[in-house]
Length: 385
Image (tube, rainbow, N blue to C red; front, side, top):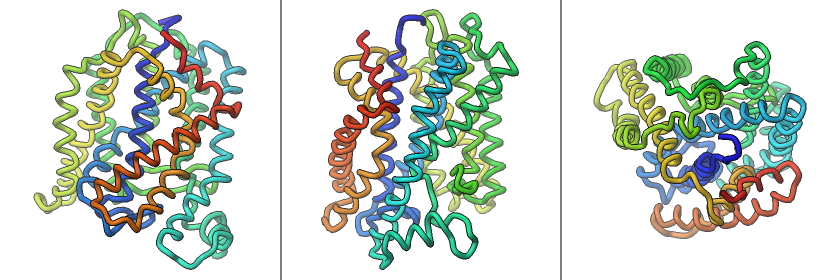
């Protein structure tokens, strides 16, 4: 693996981030959109987008954390403690703090502004976002918007670093080995139990909480992110994707991914009408969700490692801009959705229009962000093969 960049992981991350952007726009047009969502076009909504959201929401972030774990442990081994932490702080921690402090409030304010609620931005910040006069803490609308990922990633990198000090073997690669059935079944069992337990405890698998001002997270998902970032580190240690290493078989995983793609959204929407027992509904839903998550991660790894482990001008350009597109996209695409609200078109047409305009503007702004020192390293993805 030395000397060869894993272009397919760059390309996979780029694909996932662009999927995330159109996913966030789709939430503006979904039926039964969350009341707190930043822009909701209630007059132009469609159940298709609800199904799309239910599908994409399962695997987007686990793939992101897997890639972060793979590259993170590789980078720690290559650069050592001091240089590695300097890079994490410059590239992840500082952008997280700056984004949450400066850009989260204006984005969250769109929830009120897009609904014509008569409250100015300063009042919103002082009573509903940064401060709550009644409790003395953060307000009910407080959020890190998309930057929550950088906060969780900072904490998980800290855990990974501390674990590498307790287990020196984490930073030493072993001979290429395939994941055995015990690993895969254990992974499935852990995911299934987490989904069932957190759904029963919280009663809401989309619940968001914040720990003071520090972290914003979903209780039902946080363990999954821990699992997948360490699965990424495990994959590097066991030389997955090396010349003689394990590569998930697209032919094996993708058909099951397609089956789970059809089964999970349908059950999540209509399952309650099939079974009356809420526990039975949760158990079946957790089964389909587990199947979708595992087959999506391994299926996408298989597809991209098999067919997209190369680069060219387009792929290199998009991969180099993927992180900066993630960083600025909410501040761009939601105003686009807001300005499209008066247009009377079918939901699908409005979504496509919002995606085209939003992706183009996000790409343009992301190019400018590459000049900032904290994002400059993303240009490495342009390296030719």
